[in-house]
Amino acid sequence: MEMNFVVPAIIAAIIGFGLYKKADVFGLFIKGANEGIKSAFTILPSLCFLMTAVGMLRESGILEWITGFIAPAAEKIGFPAEIMPLALIRPFSGSAALGYYKELSENLVPGSFAEKAASVLMGGSETTFYTVAVYYGAIGIKKGRNTVPAALSADVAAAILSIFAVNLFL
Image 1 (cartoon, rainbow, N blue to C red):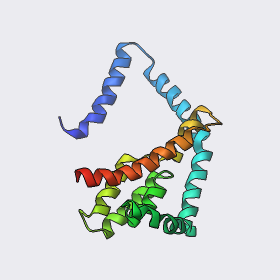
Image 2: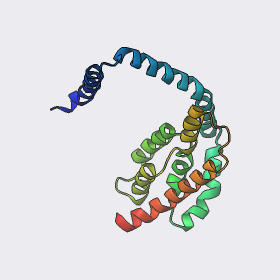
Image 3: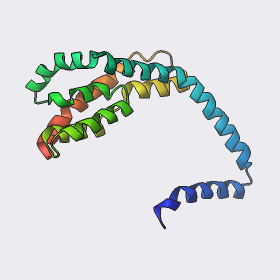
Image 4: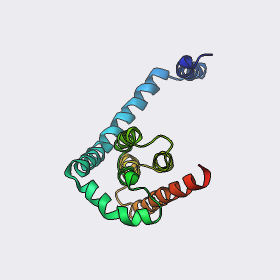
């Protein structure tokens, strides 16, 4: 079976199973789509704020200022200054981090320590604020006082451990 047919085959299997169970497949699909649209409208304000904040950070120069402030301390533990903006953007936006990673990979020497560390960082960290905004917004949680500090601690650990992992394994 070719890979082009996997998704349509899964969809056909789900529809076939629903028909076998004598379920109202179309009605259930419409009900699920309606709930999805309601969820989308619930989380939309959080996403708009998050995307605006990331754009403002990049365009205002604050990101470069923060990077310049933190980079000397980070370099003492072996963290390359070139990937510091990636470590700062990643908790906010996956797409912005991916865009920055693309720029990095074009400008860094392939196979260099910084390029490998950036790759490990991209794969080993999470878009913390995006995830919190989407999931908390979808289920209506207003107070997540311990979630963000714990998740940001994990992001810092991922950044530091990406350096150690590259040194150890690559």
